[in-house]
Length: 460
Image (cartoon, rainbow, N blue to C red; front, side):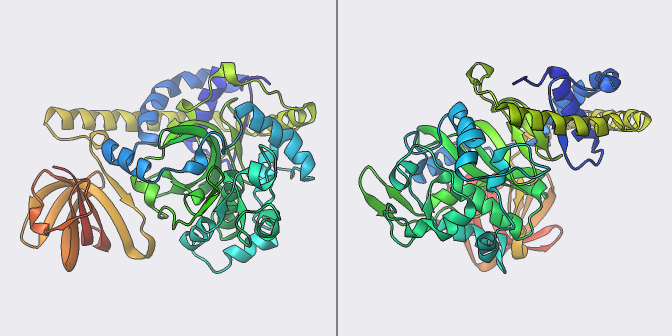
């Protein structure tokens, strides 16, 4: 399979940065000669954009490490996770497709996509009438059991329907009566349910790759959801719930990680292989596929498998399908009005120069620039927000804190809880001092006021 050349990768960035309104972009080696002369303008924009697209939501390395070890996922160990990149690719694009009698839809370019089935009756049943968080909690109740135990093979991907309706009754299921399988079935079934509940294809995806939970690096599949309020993705981990440990023959019950957990804590990705749902697919190792505008991030660029490790070649029929669908959308890209592209490039360049000038002025005056500060607004579900920032002023009943989103006044209810760093002990709100970095959870009274339910001191 041909690799994506440098010019085409810039073309991706070019089209995405300009927001030309296409629903998806299919990419392959080469590129449109008619756009080549404009690509050089994008180099500085691409460099500027990389540092903004997927920033860590909070620079709390010690807390991250502490929490990741506390929630060590033994079911992500190398012996119980996905195969390696090439083995997983070959299984999905050849063996899995044949075993499950799968057929590509007209807008699909990979058999990975056929495992996301939002229209399936069993999927719609678990999604009906539930919030996105409730669907995630349903997924956490599924039991992780490795394929070797459940199916007697190293790798077996189940359709969401089979997983939801048949896995509980398998004679090999060590947790009788429970919906069970390993990470990939849980990940793409959760995405299927979220899509059935109304999440746009642009805003939810399955990710496959390698992760490092508790010092064990292994192949894994997980879910990512796009948060428009921060223009970034956060992870959902359905396998953080119940699981069966085959080494000890023990079933463990767990309530799993909260829905918003990875909006605050870093997900321990080592490398990324693929992103996909029923509508989009991106092969990160080969840099090709069809992709939504908000899918290309720094993660896509930096967490790739070394090219020397990419050996699997697509079957001829799959390669022909991809090339034909790629060609059609390249023609659409080439038809974009050239003058409008030039105008948008100039607007973007001016905006970037203004941002750089403002950042430089802030640094010269001793102010902290947005990239240097810890900040994020997390989850505005049912009026609840979480925000990280620095304490600027402390008054008897109000704290003023600075974040990249502006200055917020934080008021306290009578039962507000203060948590000291690295402990679960509650202290007095009076312990908060100017200059501290804190995490506040509460409700947003108005655009600049938070009523705190709890406050956690992150650093003094």
